[in-house]
Amino acid sequence: MKVLIYLFWGIIYQGVIYAQFVPGQSYYGANNYIEYIAGDMPIIFVAPHAGNLEPINLPDINTRGSDNGTMEQALFFADSFHLKTGGCRPHIIINHLKPNKLNPVFSESDSTISAGTHPIALQALNDFHNFIQIAYNKVSADWGKGHYFELHGNGTPEEWNMIGLGVSKTFLNMSDSIIMTRVNNSTIKNLCTVGGADFLEVLKGPTSLGGLLDSLGWKSSPSPTHPAPPDTVTFFYAGQNTWRYGSKNNGEIDATHLESYWKFMVLSANKSKYSNDLADAIISFMNIHYGFNFNCQTIGLNKIHNKPTFFLYPNPASSNEFLYIESPNTIKELFVFNTIGQLFKVPFYDKNKFKLNLKPDTYIIFARTSNGKLMYQKLVVQ
Image (cartoon, rainbow, N blue to C red; front, side, top):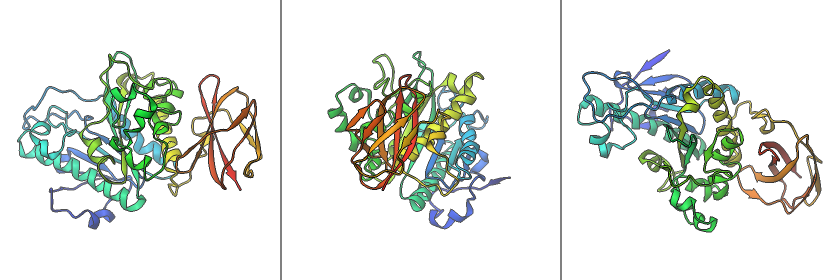
């Protein structure tokens, strides 16, 4: 069942209307141009260039086409996250107008660029940002932190994904020490300062979104394999919405400008697997770096990507105890994170034995195999 609601900018008090939005239910702004699928997770997906509606009463403001595949991707997330988390749902905002009629990657202050001057287009622009703000406020109130993902498509000849976190290609090509100076200028500032997550790991490490996608066979940057895009590529590292709804300037919600290569989303040979892998990678990313409990039937990290299981013992373990690994694959690297995403170095590793000096807590062990794949296992230190 779809519900039509009319949002008039400036007259709706967000705190009063939370109860009106049922997770999984679609709500619409004026003329059904903007859709909000309400959620109850600390995740917001926004598809600003997904639509194909071209009402003849709305003037063209540009010649831009749609980001093909982002509509299907957003709707896939609406169902797949519900299934993969045992009942939780992300917040989803979709613009159903073609970008030549409404280009809401700009804010209301740039309304001439984003909507022209037509009152109906301006209403759609306001509805778009109103719905995002409703989701944003809901996530902040319920979780205290969260992540905004803006879905786009790209057609670069290199055929890869771009994971924009507010760090430009210029800095990604510099040393790690210089990259670290950009944490307060990134769209993940809150996660990597207040949240204590490792900035370099979230940005380009094995458990970054780019690293997780790359390990699944979807070429992505930044990642361990591709820490920076080549000079020939225009790298979309942020846009007005990701700056606005990310945590650089304020707030507790971080943001990713996700540019998926269009063939990954559109071609029948790719789209189902890519959307499923991307959903898994985002769930992994959120579990690892935010340590969320979604109050649903959560899935084990060692099963998220259907990887071969590796055995870790003793588990539970004591501090300063030697641990052993049994795995059908040759393990080349180990990474250890606590539940809020802090990275711990492995001080000793020899074939199948390593030793950690960790305080009592729950940790996640990531093992990278010789073929570049990641396996996961939880470790309890008593």
